[in-house]
Image (cartoon, rainbow, N blue to C red; front, side, top):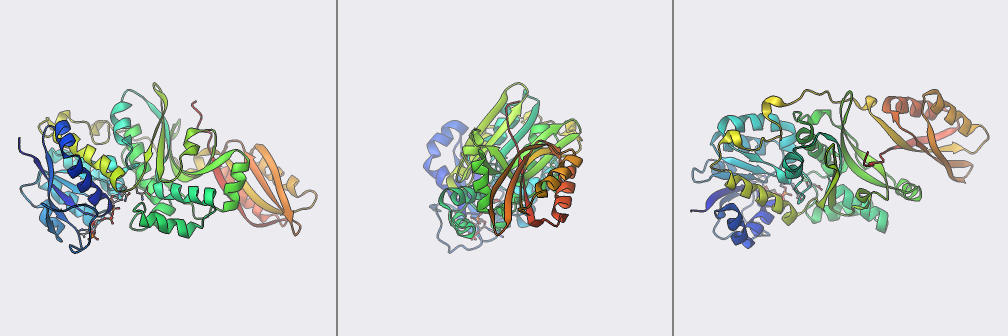
Length: 436
Ligand code: NDP
Ligand code: HSE
């Protein structure tokens, strides 16, 4: 059978990695897919730039619309990124009846609902395994492997750049800006690295994971997002002394009132496997009612790990080319007419425990005032530790039991108004992530 002809939009880190893997593993891939898969037409901005892959045999263009309008192609891979040009290109490719493979989480999280509806009406597939957790086949695991479960919650380290930064800062005491530069050089970071640092990239991925886990539409704007830029080495070190690691987590949880969707730095007990996932590695812990907790681990970014997911999608699409569109796996795991309208909870209504750090004048009665405020708001304290005094100012760490965020917000406001408290309090949420 003739090879399937594929168009490639973008030949940077992931695009270059994809060409490399497709060429190196051509035989294995063809034995799996039942046909060869060949990139024949590719687009980039600068055609003179040195590439990480051998581009021989591929027609190059600086006009990506030439690729999506090429009638010879069955599949288009979108690896440009962003949700402007990429959105137009994907929409045009689908309108032209082409199947699409993409690693673009921003595009799927923000416009996936419309893209999937358009794809369904045209009978084409849009595959996006590479959009979440790089080389880990987490979309397939949740959408297909756990299809018998009612998923209760999932929590993941789903941004390689921030995990790399936190690990290097903790283990080597390296400077934040310096490690970020290295992550950019290694091809881990987004075109705009604030997407990584401020949790936006993780929020894109969490949006996708929650949709396929709970059968809800993609709702990126409802994810609570907090980044790592305010974390200090001091808090990382105190957390360690208390038996915790700080990880940037995306958490989606089904509770009685709806769904929690949140991305923020989180203290996790260091004995949990996920607390020991370091560097650019990602991990997603999924709790299903039947399987119980399952953990998926692997590289979350980089050229070939991400290409691994892109190529797996290509193989899937090629295998399904002749299948009746109604019998394919639904894009978001659940049948499109069976999505649920469960509400997404406001952050005020989320219940979690907290690590608090404050600085107070080291005088009798100061801590009593703090604990009175907490008790008035029904916040129960698990531990209080004084970490030493400098120039009459004591650093105090408090760990609380679970409490609603709105109560904690009020407590922090009142504590900071006390004349004996100096500077801003630090608050980091804590999760036990136990199997129950
Ligand atoms: P790069 O910046 O390395 O590559 C982007 C490519 O798109 C480049 O080849 C660039 O051309 C090309 N491009 C940009 N704009 C245009 C345009 N208007 N017309 C034609 N070509 C264009 O990005 P990545 O490979 O890192 O990321 C690609 C996608 O994959 C993004 O959606 C990203 O979020 C996602 N992703 C990335 C991962 C990673 O580890 N890097 C992991 C998982 C997903 P030129 O090279 O000439 O500048
Ligand atoms: N910038 C992303 C990360 C790329 O660091 O995880 C992988 O999606």
